[in-house]
Amino acid sequence: MAAVNNHDTPSAGATLHYIFDPMCGWCYAVAPLVDAARSVPGLKVEFHGGGMMTGANRRAITPQWRDYVLPHDRRIAELTGQPFGEAYLEGLLRDTGAVMDSEPPTAAILAAEALRAGGGLDMIHRLQRAHYVEGRRIADVDVLTARAAELGLDGEAFASAFARLSGAATARHVAESRQLLQRAGGQGFPTFVLAQADGTASRIDIGPWLGRAEEWKTQLSGWVAPLPAASTGSTSAMCGPDSCAI
Image 1: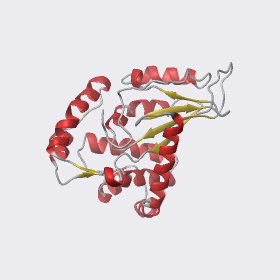
Image 2: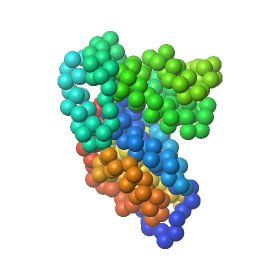
Image 3: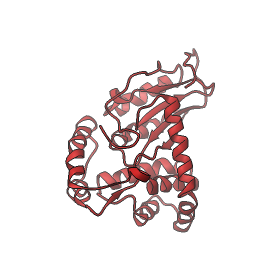
Image 4: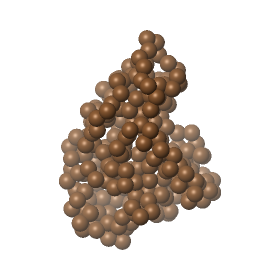
């Protein structure tokens, strides 16, 4: 990333880049922090879907996968208070016909953003709840279409945008997100990068802020300028770039 400099006065046009994956448990963990960031004056939040479970990394749900993720889900709940519904714990995680594929929900998120500014972040939040609370298969097109309708998006417009942004367009978005992740020195999802209008930027270690949305919001307001010190360490609150290894 660009060199990190301190400033004496606030800089307009700061952007919080949120590099995520819709199938990432730790991205669900930071959902309250993303929501809080959206209400910080002078700060824009941009999302970047990293394609954690696409192509060869798509994963079918198996009993072994359930045994693997449950301890981490409990850890997320303990740290953040984020809910995990019975429909997820005893439904989706036992649904061996379900496939976790990041590509369709990422395309849906891009489609929502294309139809309404801020719609992509709204869709991320809605799909996380659909997955972790309601136990829905968020890689299924009918599930994505129903969630778009719940967000007030026109059905025909969403279907058209989803078709246009699936496939190659989503692949380009994922590739660009991976490039940003690499430039930022991030190790996985979620990664947050705070960038100023003058080009200075810093990656933020999100681990200390889990479960502290109001404090995070206050700190972000102060960080709009000067930037936080560059983070060089890693946090365990993260999914890897190609799997949700925690």
